[in-house]
Image 1 (cartoon, rainbow, N blue to C red):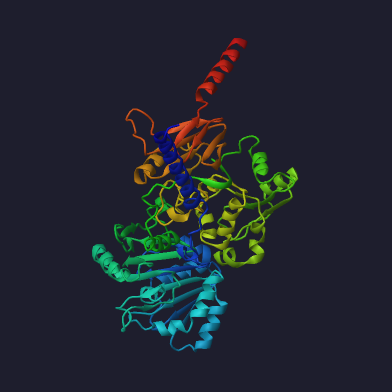
Image 2: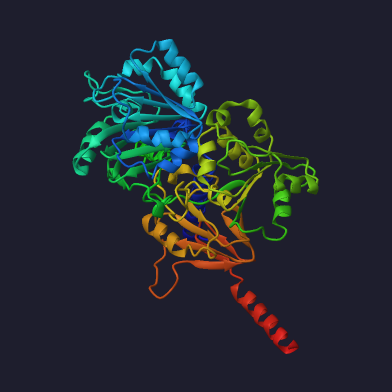
Length: 569
């Protein structure tokens, strides 16, 4: 080999080494997710209803009937005026003959009696009257009792004057000394009530939010009621409610109108809002843009990923998972359900299946408490020695809420670093990517969810994973996502179909196909914008290249089988 040839070969070798070194250090199981990047309290246990002068409680009456029937409602008023108003009528109807509405004076009742009433009640109304008389300091004396009241599932109804004090920030026209800290019973919110023109309202809210970017602005028009139940917001009445997030750099403000809930659109995306998603988006806008405009190379340095499209398991795949976890004699497996409920049974079919296979250790782990996931050593113990983790199906935002940026999240990544395996189906498939697809808590029709896109657990970077792909006709959704973020590699998995990823190689197994969307290649108008590979195929995620395509051989086999059946007939 002459010197020139040697130089070229050496340059190529060095370049290859640099690429491999960059892949293994830059993309391999880094942990840059932070606990502070996610809201701590994801929900309120009870509900808050803001009465902003709504005249017709008809649409909200079924809710009141359900939660107030046969109960005693404690109503605290600052001004002991006539209780006759639309709210009083609605509450009287709701409690029925066995319940009652007790009206007390807010300013005349001693503080200890107010605290005692809050401690014993399950339904409380606080009304200021026509003036801002129930001030912030008066309510702050009751802050522990109010928080405990909501924690135990109580219902709090307040008028607009009181509602302004319940957010994270109190507006300057409410406090004489400018913006101040509210009670944060409506977490990370600032409320502007009695709004007129929507355009003026959003502009006023933006002025408040610019110095407080991790806050959600809410503008509530007159003749409306707003209900925060858990983490979901619904509005009632004849007008609209505006929700606002501050913009930054190249990200414009987020402004959306929530339509009042009616019988014909209950639960629709136009009349239902997830407050946690908005709070998460507010935080996200203060961080580095995501996903990065640079292309990240999908690469699993150690261990393996098993990513299933839901709708059933390919034959023999769980045995393969156990093998990748060290075999039955050494496998220590943890099952993590994807559940919205606080408490779920530890008796899971997957755990029973593992036990039947005779693995060394099989356990289930679940929490909705981010503090527990970040510091409870007893809870974290199974992850410290796990050789395999399996994420269940459901709605993937639940897994992001519970674990993103926690110590549990770090320990999950360490399973791969030790050479173990991480697997999951449906939601448990999508959560494995750094970019989290189809994660909105309101419905599952949108593949992009502001606030949750950064929510993947990041066992593999540079990809977006969707599931139930052909069965739910999600091809155009992935096309939309790839048009927005062409730097990502899109992966759409059919049901009962999976990829097993080691290094950058993805092996396809199962009944359906896996669709790979690569926007680094030109899209032909008369051709699909993806390649769809069946079982036995393999794809290089880093090079975005087909390694093996078994399509032709399978088609020939299917044709032979069809001919044989035809001959039998």
